[in-house]
Length: 370
Image 1 (cartoon, rainbow, N blue to C red):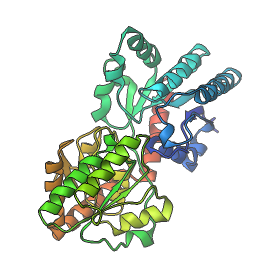
Image 2: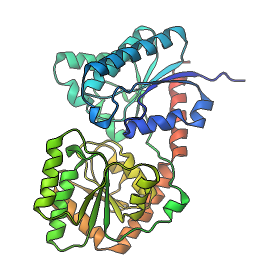
Image 3: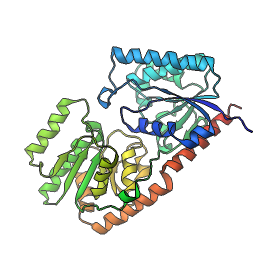
Image 4: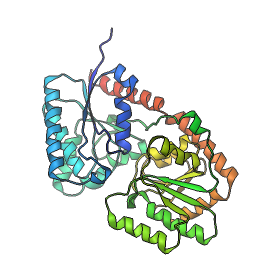
């Protein structure tokens, strides 16, 4: 009987809930992953809430040191064929993860980084220290990324031969949810409420739709991020242009409660300015919703313009309003795009597709070291 390879997974697990942590949770609970390999998991998370992400403090530094010691000791006293890490590409979290990666290299670990974000290229140019740190961290590692569209971000550090791609996947919605009752004019935004996700651009587009006497309702579902000034600016805009009856803020929703918003929506909008592979778009597609989003990251791979949605320019309320108006005014287009969304989801972005792709890529990486 063939001996299963041993892999140490050093990954961010929820809470807080974000794309990478949810994918990591899926990996840690995967029957296929855990029966194909001998797996051990170490939680890399130091933030307790989405609002804490990107902030540095003494408590998080202490938690980081504890994680470093635990991971290094685990590698030193157990022989692993591979150490798999979800590496944060920039910010304070990169220093935390990068230092751990260097420590693991010192004790002989073979590393594979799974990247869920971008910003490596931009941040590695900010001074000689950062340039060298990125070079040291990425030297002689294997990379798992989300899409070939994101290779540009690391092409100065990693040769193509060391990069594999695994698109994200999500569970299928429950059957009783997928038999939905989409409302004709309900627009759904589901993400954290922050500048980079395009929520302000969406309320600006709402103003344009109102001025054109177009009937619509927008549900914002998600947590307010850690900028109180932004929250007040957005709410003041909604009040100033009398959008209160058109725009609703519901806070974060999970499980069946979240599914209800997808069920009642006629299409999904995420006018993001900084995303790679949003799981919320996959969720929308699994509920047969057309998607309006931007050309950020791998989104053009997921959303095909004029097929299962529209791709619009960032920071352009008029372009966004035009796309929303096209779907709002054309029910047959909405249904056709919704059907295309589900077809593309079922073919590419289910949990089983993700798990099989993930296991195949890990086996490819392991074979390089045999």
